[in-house]
Length: 144
Image (tube, rainbow, N blue to C red; front, side, top):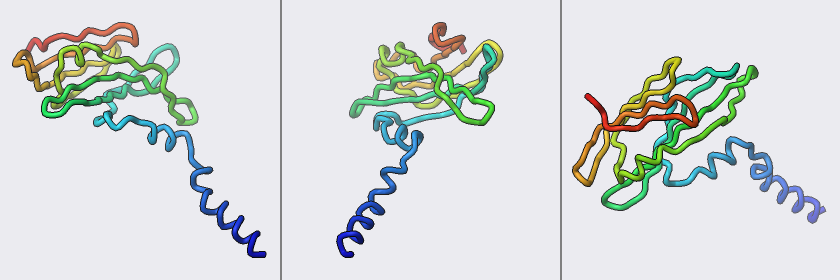
């Protein structure tokens, strides 16, 4: 009887690990360098619709360097969400800047992101990102 009780108790204690779900597992795999995740706007294309998700990862000590990622998350009719595309805006890391703040807007043409940066090189600190599709975007110094 004691042996059966021990086995039942051991199984009960391990149950939460066995009952993990895809969301929980995915969040647990998110690298510690990812420090900011925001919904940036909505999109609709080819019968799908969803949201843009922006992720910022940082590395470095006294001078932080950011990496910026744009993702397309689609919603099914049952409300479930699926990651459809993900791209890195490589110019952000190449510049060696940190993103201090940003705001975004979306419309039928795509996503616009206005970035305020900390530039340790002393250069430009305002940038614009216009994302038209997962294969087409424009990143440049802010004009205003």
